[in-house]
Length: 374
Image (cartoon, rainbow, N blue to C red):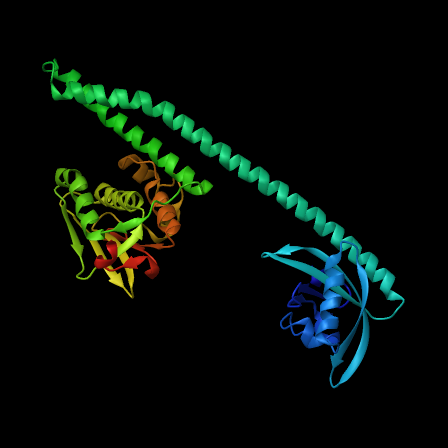
């Protein structure tokens, strides 16, 4: 806003700190690029400068103030017009415009009044837009929760009865074709339930309504549990799956359910995109005090041009993969959202035909020694 004003203009905080200055203010007032303080520029006593700031911030109308400036060993009396213009980064901000001559003061005050009015209008518009966005986000989360509940109830019944029929509790399913149909229903029902859960979780994270229930998490123990869960799927493709925990691996303060979901997402992707008789490693280590989790595979790999898209919801690497490998494209998006919710980072490296490595890094302040687990 200071750059848009034709006169020397500076933006100041209520404590006198200079936040911005236009080119003329740097030349005519000695405001060094908007750094320093009004107290450094003024020749007045600090109490007089505080009184000037108090009058300016009292607003909302622009007020004329006299200010003596130190300029190259001499003191120059200047007239400025000042008014509050809004809040930035939690601070009240005022705009001070210097008049080059007494006759310019009314004109500068009028210009400042127009600037203040326009900023006030923009601030009100931003508040309204923010409120609308928050209401829309809240509505989306409520809608997803309601739809999720309505879908889960029939899906759980479908999955439960399919499992019961497959178990043969009430006798074998004949003919065999019917058994195959029941198996397909069971697999499809489970996949749809996973998709419903994933969409709901992503919606909660994006809306900022997901709450982390933190406690001490033993990564080595959790890693072994997830590897056992995913082991059957890996065995069906004759994949070598192993978990490696570095000695002295710290526990972390985290939400165990969220960490478990991150591991399941990464390992499920690795199993899905690794061809038969490939290799997958879950490596848990500590680097510079930060706990890290890496999933490495010898899968089909991802072209560099497609890596960024992997973290977008519902995005797939390309149409060919969408046809060859089932999935919603939510796994990496959810994992990224969850690790960032913990203050961490996710990095992906991949080479087509060689494999992929996805690494999660948790901030060092989340690490704790095993003896601190309580």
